[in-house]
Length: 267
Image (cartoon, rainbow, N blue to C red; front, side):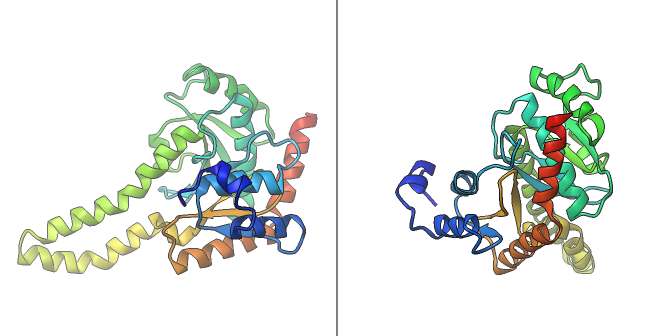
């Protein structure tokens, strides 16, 4: 976990990560899941599996809960700096992934920004807007941070720097709820009774925030299936990572991304 990406790539070719990805490249297996170092998984997956044609940068997508169901946040940390063309490709890959994995025809895609007007934001966001608008996706324009939990769109596109901050903030939210719940219960006997009655409700509420339910996040854009999990993944999380890999295979996610990227390149 503490090795640099360079060490993992050049000096540890006998690691389980390296060997498993080589087996997928050679057709011996059809998917790869890992709770190892995220940077190493991304680098080795890209190096060994290669990128799908037309993909400039592989990207990580993760689902966050909202008032209208899970919302895909993409990029969630693979690319700290992104070009406008990268954001457009994230939107295309995120649209395909959400449509196939969540069974949502023509999911709505939004570009995360500081305002709804297309003239708002930094240079990258402003230049990415027309690229997303021309892409063969259901582009809904700019969305703001408050729109994520509202479920205004099905896919939220941003660079990995912003996305990872949002992801880590979201992951801390269930802990805050639990803390406030226990704080409430400690106020006295009557509060303990109320807390006991509300316990199951709270567990149900925070279940959607539990990373174990999704297992891991997919690295989209590589020529294979690579699912990245938490370093502290539980057996349940590992199980769900394997299920996600199988679902991606069965629903032909990579084949559809390949077709969508080919269409985007020729249009």
